[in-house]
Length: 393
Ligand SMILES: Nc1ncnc2c1ncn2[C@@H]1O[C@H](COP(=O)(O)OP(=O)(O)O)[C@@H](O)[C@H]1O
Ligand SMILES: [Mg+2]
Image 1 (cartoon, rainbow, N blue to C red):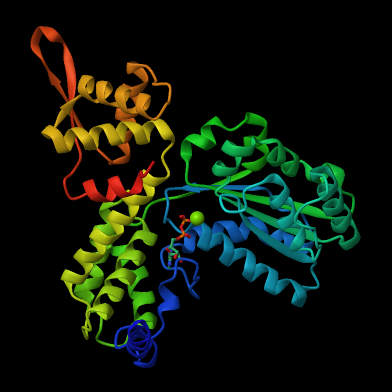
Image 2: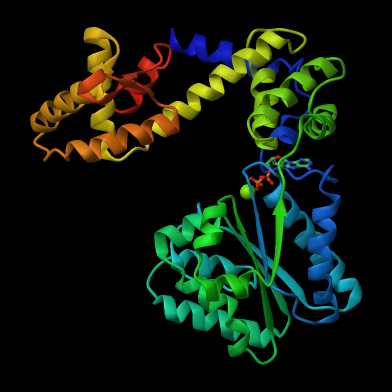
């Protein structure tokens, strides 16, 4: 009886109060705490750059970079929000926009989103990009204040749409008489910064702030602060927090990763009806998160890498580990079965290297004496089903 199952779930999940979470929202990646431990220096630096906005002057554009989970988004949102809150008390005209250009993914939507923070309503389609831009400029001039625009994860945007908009925005002040715009660009990708058009980099990077990774002790403090508010007292011991911090510190000091571990461990504890979070729960959380990451990585691959994975999976089932040549032959056959033109063996070798780097397969180079070298390729048996499920063609 389906309705009984639903009743039971509603009863157990909604009516019964959680014994684990006091306020789970606090562990959500978008939640910004009141204070950001171990980012005082970065907050200070960004605030020093932007504070002149409260005198009506245009601050320098800022380029922020550092690995994922180092607090870039949190710091940028924190500082811009706090300054904008102060503005009215100082008679300053200051507004801020935040756009994640990985999620808001077209030039049209990026400008529309920036403009909407000035109260401008742009229809979701139907007008030209140049017209949206023109309306933004007009609204800026009518208002005459200082607009701080945070463009997050700009590498995604530029790789997709090119750097025209960025180039335009960093020079927008040349078109303005009364209003001013300051751009804060954020990226996780250091290569992106180095490959940026020098003109864009010099304008955007008038100031640059690099966010270093957190170490295990810093992650401990960050987790502790959140855990104290998110969990009921006594549910998460300091040993659990240290453990999550140590695991995340090994992954380049990613605070998001550390928070995810703690949140998922809590969810598992709750599902199991436990009263406290244990090391076992964290270990299970780590596996769950890793499986999620693998699934995500495999399911979003382009067609040919998926075909190569399919070939490796079939070979795993037939004989276990296989060589580059065997993978190529199998791939070739599968491609033809699907009516797809196979790529060259050289391209397939490159794809194998990439799949290895993403962590979807294991490839070890071995010498075959006078036959040269090959790779021995396999997929971790625990991940086989997940990957197979993720690449459904
Ligand atoms: N110093 C900090 N104190 C508290 N929470 C932090 C700190 N640094 C990062 N976080 C949290 O970790 C997660 C990832 O941070 P985020 O700013 O999104 O990283 P990035 O943008 O560099 O990838 C967010 O939930 C954020 O609130
Ligand atoms: Mg971010």
